[in-house]
Image 1 (spheres, rainbow, N blue to C red):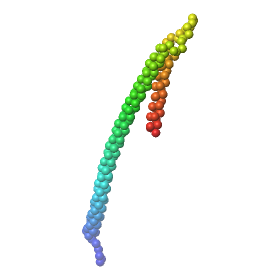
Image 2: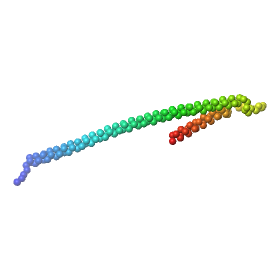
Image 3: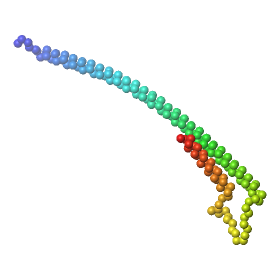
Image 4: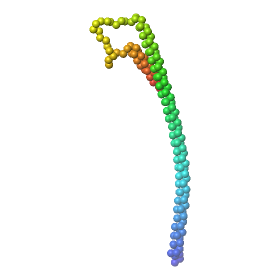
Length: 157
């Protein structure tokens, strides 16, 4: 028998081959783990960047919302003050006109009321007609309100 291998030599060869396979597998897994660590580190870096950008955008949105809220509050205050001033002007003008009309009619130049028996006067009931001065004041206030709203809506466009 020219070349016989003893069971000890075969066992030694198999052991060396298994050891080499195990060593190769360990190198492969080590290299794979290193690549995964690099990928994990890159993922962490990307996540940290994303978190920072998200926080920055949130702060920017909060600042913009605060600025918008402040602007809306200023506009509401200006509108309220404008309405109050305009109504004061209309009411003062109506009061001035009522006083002027009262002074002019005190001279007796107006139409006299008929006097006759059986004439009834309308009292201050639920359906009584308001005085002309009151109607004029209401009309002036309504006109001013409509004009102000029209200018406001045109300003929004």
